Length: 246
Image 1 (cartoon, one colour):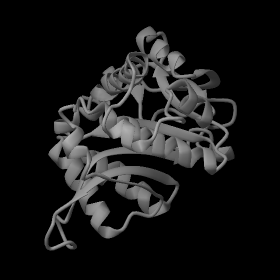
Image 2 (image 1 turned 180 degrees about the horizontal axis):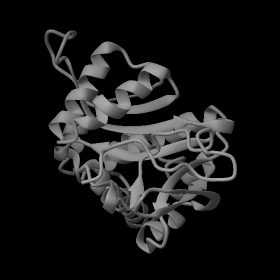
Image 3 (image 1 turned 90 degrees about the horizontal axis):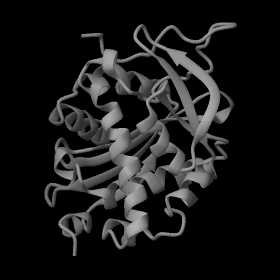
């Protein structure tokens, strides 16, 4: 049994486009607890009010009272924004600090999100990676992603989209054939664990600067904007929403 397996037995997994008030409160608390409160107040809350976000959530609930403020705790969340042509823009799975190495939980959330996108006929799911950041590029290539034709820029760097069909990523990471129970218990062989770990840890490291309010150093941008729809004619968007520069 792994360290996280007992706790994972009480986790609830769900995918939603319209989280209820208790889930929103729990998500705000999750962002505050992990020291990026602006992510909820400045980015997620406005986007949720407009629609277009898909959340894959891993939550736990207190025994009593079962409802009300504080009744639900977010353990991890995966986010996709559905943009033009039904393409999904991804944000790496965010975990509570106590789940930083809980690869089974990360795998389960990733599986739920990608399966939802596949069933919703999303043609592709992608990440924006800083141009020339080879470590991130390689981690995504091993997960089935390839460089796409979209580019974006901030004042500090150029970013390239790496995209793939959701089903292709599920196959590359072996998530399509693994059961949720086996993922949560981390019943994986060495190769499966290596691929999933490299994928998650590389993306988490790439997003760290953004979460710390330092977009100047961000190796990865979160998928929290409809990149295609906001592109001006003949150009790329001038930046991305999110934290101010340091």
